[in-house]
Every structure is written in C-alpha cells, then in structure tokens.
Image (cartoon, rainbow, N blue to C red; front, side):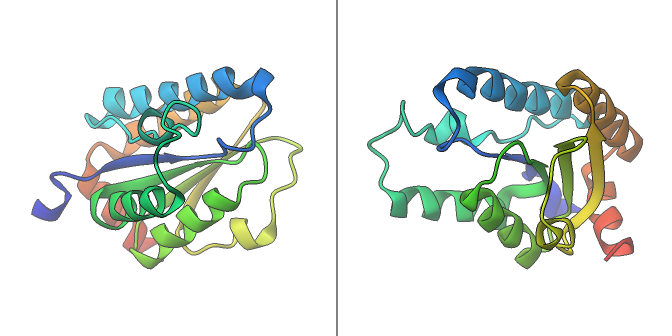
Length: 162
C-alpha cells in the first residue's frame, strides 16, 4: 500500500452556488468532515474552499482550478466524501473523476433530500449516509471511518464492493 502513503480524503460539495447566508455554515461543515478524517484515519481531508474559494481565491482561472483539482483527485485522493447539500455541477465532475481513478466514495445527504439516481448509482459510491442533522452526519461518518482503520482498507473496501 505504498502508493497510499501520500493520499488523503477529499471533501466534495457545493460552494460557488451556495446562498451567501449559508456559505460559512457549509464551509464549517466541510472543515468538520476534514477534521474527523484526521481524527479517525490520521489524514486530514483536502477541502477545496481552503485552496480555491471562489471569493478569497478569485484570481484562479477556471482552467487552473480544473487542472489542480483533477490532479488532487487523480493522484492524491484515497476517498471522496460527497456532501450533497444542493445541486452542484462541479461535484458531479469530481464524482466521475473519482470513479475514473478507482477512488471509493461516501455519499452524505439529508433525509428527504432528492438526490439523482445517476449520482446514487455511480460505481465509486460504496457507502451512503442519510442524516437528519449535520451533527448526525458527522457522527455516522466518524463511525464509518473508524471501522476502516487504515487508508489501505479504503482501497480494499473499494475493490471488494466494485
């Protein structure tokens, strides 16, 4: 599992199209997910807004963001954590990048939320967490990751459930 040494989870979720009144709350949720990854598997997740926030990092061109995020997912990601809060064109692209790269994914969405069958049926999605509250989502994610123990188990999990 030497190739996993430098790979980390990646938090995938809407950012650009979020209403201004919810942006900070959602960003905090993504950061909490990244911190749970550090706590449970020893690797903090990559959180796109910490690197490519559309407001703080507005000088990055769309082509530059695409290039950097592709490299992150293709070469440096062990697990994609999909947070389906609102529709997101970028998130769908990230999910398919993960599928292309044989990166397993966990889908998180709030109970009652309509999530497309196309997304739910993506072969990279190996586990789904349907939650009532953000704290409930974090609790279930912590439990799921805690059961994996190592990044190597993420890859085994992917291939066994392919």
